Every structure is written in C-alpha cells, then in structure tokens.
Image (tube, rainbow over all chains, first blue to last red; front, top):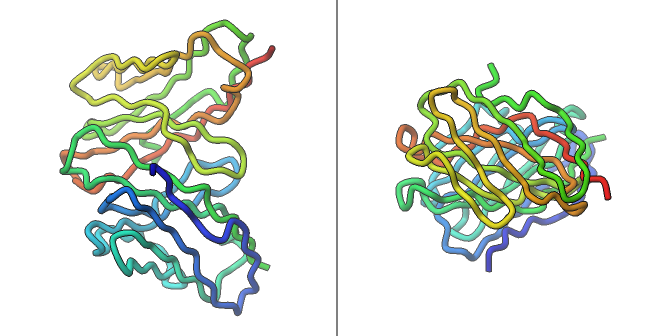
Length: 116
Length: 115
C-alpha cells in the first residue's frame, strides 16, 4: 500500500464555516506534511509533523490548524478562511529524513478547496 | 527568493523523441533532488530522485543528471510517450541539514508529447 488518501476531494465553504481536511496513510511513515498549491504555482509547504509532533509551521495563519491524532492520520482544521485561501491542499508522507537518505514523499490526490 | 527554478514553463516534443527538462537551484545545502509528475486535479506522483553523492540515476525511460558545480539537474525521458504529457516539478531538500524532509519545488514545466 503506497497510497495517501485525502478526503474530501472537493470542498466549498463559506468564510464563517468550520471544516476539516483529512489525510490517511498506512505505509508506516512517521513524517506527514500539508502543502498548499495555487493554480499554476508549485506546492508550498505549510506544516510538517514528525513522529506525531509538529516540527515545522511555515508561518501559516492561525485560521489553519493542523492535528496529528496518530501516526496514520493528519487533519487540517479550517476556520474563518478567506477567498484567497482557495487552493489545492495536498497531504504527503515520508519516512523520517534520518531513516534513509534516499526517500521520497508520497502525495495524496489533494482536496480542492473553494472559499466563498 | 526562488531556491529551485525551472526556467522553461513549457516543452513540446514529438512522440519517440527525447524530452529534456531542466532545473537549477541556488541553495548549496540541498543534498537530495526529486522529480514529480502532476496531472490536473491530482497530487504529484514521484518519478525519480538523486542524491548529491551521485551524478546520474536511471530508472527505465527516465534518467536524472546532477551537476553540482553548476547547481543544475535535468530529467531525460527517452522515448517520450503521449502519456508523459503532464506538469513536471523539480524538488529539492536539505536532508542532512534540516532532517525534516521538507521539499522546495520549482515552478513546474508543462510537457506535451505529440503523437
């Protein structure tokens, strides 16, 4: 199983809504990531969790709140978003960088988020 | 400050010919480089990677070359197939320095392979 599963695939939410994006992997990876990708731009890192602990927050606004309940799950809680937050949100996982030098990150299919 | 650059937004090649996608980087701490392929509305799919201790890595039709002195890498696809048409992202990480697996992506190159 080399799959990272993200739900939902599409989400439309109002600026006052609270919603959550979910990500799951069963590859035994202990590093999980949230990336954001705007149209015609590269993915940009938002958060890194290593062994279920937040290790990197790339100065992301507090309206995005990550959570790692266990080694297989990663959530992104959304509250009071702005229309400019509309993007493709990608989850990824990888073995911790120290485990093996040559390791790649596996990405999910993403959640297409539209804030109205 | 773009640490990973793909200067060609698009590339068009004929089926059966070679596709060469280029990538430049500025951060000398990068020690691991990857190429991802992406279709619209899907997540990036890993293609091939190379560690900074090597200058070439080959996997089937895909070969990545690394020139550390020039801070340049390239992806060669031979022979190109119409199914290779997608956006290709170059990515880099500084594993020894940061130990986080954080990837920095280039802007992407859209490859079109014509039948």
